[in-house]
Image (cartoon, rainbow, N blue to C red; front, side, top):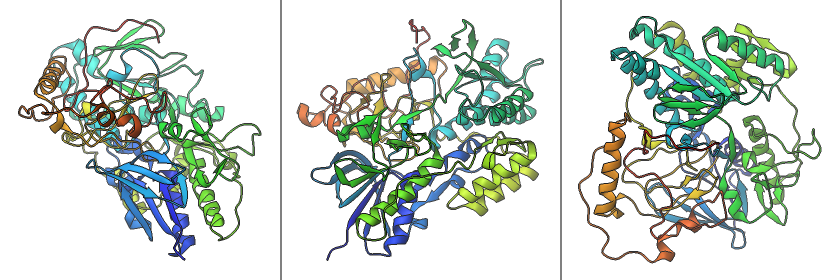
Length: 559
């Protein structure tokens, strides 16, 4: 009798936990395959510490092959699922397409950046969902302080030293708190003009910081932020973004070169292509995490609308804590469907929350006990060490070095602005010239298909990819447009583009529309399923390898 084939799509909190649990339960009696575009599990809660240089990037990247025994890792991005044929179609990092057959399927594709129809945001803001964005933000902040320290223009200095963070949830609050400390240390080595200092702003339309948490945690976080000089603007957001700054909803124009977008997440658009019922973009499942009508398909994490037994009629929030627990329950129920053990519904108990505010400061309420200050900081650090599935000693060592040594403030320049666009369905992998391009999401939540550079995954799962084309498919006219856009962006103050390639001839024979527009099938759609772009697959995606186009002329319109 052949071993059952179990395919897990996505290696975030839910997918990783499902793979680890199944590998232990199966003991080699099942063929377990994990499909993910990277070879690591990203411990997202510590990403702000990577962005400010406390932790090295590999500390929060846990090796999949090194920690998941008896699990076959396939590098690639899922772009289509045929539940009738029981197959998953994917594209690997080099653009080669493949198919995985399954007897049981676990969908744990996670979430992506939430976009709002605000003029200029997709062109000028950057998210904070993956490693490339954290590395970009670190370099960008260091560069802005260094440029501000060397300029003779006081207005330019002030703009470069102003950092705007939109969204006062977990991510935005931690980014602003850590960022304020980071820039404070930077200006000690790069003194600014007299009277100048870094300015951080935290915006949100909510009435308070961390609106989803207990008010006592919110008060603690707000107090720490204001003590560090962060301007907390509640009931305020961005009305328009330009290269020179942002126009706020209260009418104030803030000159800035940095806009960090942390307004929240939305489910991975891949689930829409399954054709099964959704609830707010999340795949509807029963209490056992099974898709109705598909007993062989399980879904968990941010991509699944899991009934919350503690709140009848509602689904569990999109948090790492729920995703981690659901991954284990999904694995147990998959094993039960194969005749091992008994299945069980998803139940949970609130263990509390922790918010790292940098240094010795944190806000925490373990088991409902509100804590602040150094005690909360110790609890927060201990929680993260206990929750990480690997690299604990290395993380602790970095924390120790941070406590006794000055922080290194250098920019490596490895990730550029054009590599991490906000409107992407794949924030986990940076764009790289010469690699197949994934799809970018448009402002309406749809996705743009086509050939070009590789895309990655969201916080906890694999994303779709475009066709197998690349920069080699660009004709001379297209390449000229790229170079022009690059030069315009440089003149407008954007970052340098990568090395300019030489001219390449246009394809002698264009591909048929059915093949060239294959991204309508391969790309995950946030709008109508299977929407195709024009021949060649491009529909509003950013030019590559040039940076995202930045225009000095503001776009008119309300959000």
